[in-house]
Image (cartoon, rainbow, N blue to C red; front, side, top):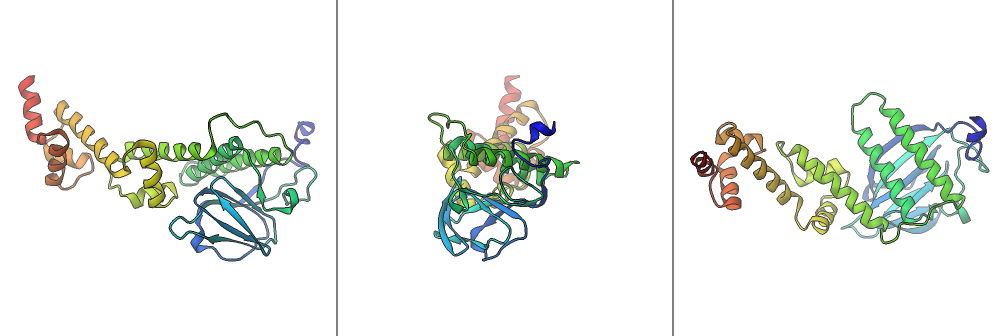
Length: 285
């Protein structure tokens, strides 16, 4: 087994994770350094990174690697669309042909060039870590460590030029947006009975409300809140047809405490009040 491992690391690849899964809003950043390696993956937005006195432009899909002692700061260039970054600090790695606890990039640049496919793979790792870190499942640390090990392998392959050709016709930006929207749809479908706001959706997805509204509209043609309303009303319609509970209890079961507001929305959507809809179903039976 040791011989197999030797093509990437001088030791078993089990990084110690010091922090991760927090998405940093670049408006809150300061100029600083760490005693460990820190990577930042830009999930959304555009901006700049100031690293050891040099300014670099960054955008969605860029991976920034700051080795121990490297001063760095994320800089806002557009206050309406600041970068949102997955950030992770780790140590105890020793990759082949590199100093211990350091990842050496080409031309000493802090930004690692990646193909669209590798960006998608790293993005998937980031979201898996975010989801795992937000859970209370046993063994959470090891699941996060496993995703970080996968990310380090992808980084090593990128550095050694073993990246696969990007899938034709599929770029990282469209994949990333699709992945985020898919998770928003799952969240809304699973939590329609709860109090849900755009800010809550944004907090759950670790993204800004403005960005979420924009990409959701692009991908679905609707806003997140309108989609939620449609889900709730469809569920209420099913409950009315099944004869479950009274109008007030159904209203509460689909997330509306105000039964009058619920009835108003239902009538606007289906052209008939919940009570009259139930009567119609009963008459048909």
